[in-house]
Amino acid sequence: MKVLRAEIGIAILIGVAILIGIIMPIAFPFPGMSVFLIFTLPWMFAGIASRINFPFALCVFAGMALYILDRRSFLNRRSGNKDTAVFLAILGLALIVESVTDGILNLSWAAWEQSMWGPLSREGSMVLAFRLVFNSLVFLSGVLLLLDQGKILEDKSLGQSSRPRLDAEARTRYPRDLFDRYVREYPHNPEGVLEWHIHKKMKEGKTREQAIEELAKGSK
Image (tube, rainbow, N blue to C red; front, side, top):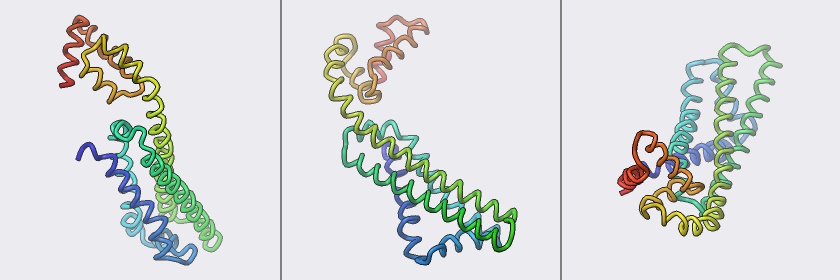
């Protein structure tokens, strides 16, 4: 399951997008109704606020944490996959649009509450802040996915132009299995990272040959 952490995180974010963009508008079709039920009522019952809002924010945080922890491996696995890039772009845009829309509704409803009944209570301000933090997390999630869809396509173009040259030059200096592992794990600069690791071990007192041999053992 470790190699699928990024995919699990994306699945959680899909659930968040479906909840905000599809389920809530269907369940509460009248403008502002869902915001009233999820945002205004908790002002009167502060305990309800944490029970309603916290799970949503926790889902976004968990989804992004899983994705970020496995992000580099995910980008390597999906490098050059146009379908994955398109999917990330759509999901990223959906999360951005939904977070901005929901944030505007929250701020608008808070302004209406203040115009009707005066300044927000401490509980009301806390709920507003929590909702805006939730919207910010969703927005940042969408931005990260949009950036990564570009990296997936970029990795392919970089790999196509540079990998043949790297293979021809570097395979004469390093064991094949060792260099192949660095190409998979560090596609942007495998030779540079490998040399850095070699010099790091040489600073520990090893010769270059010993350093390469030790690194090669770790790739088997």
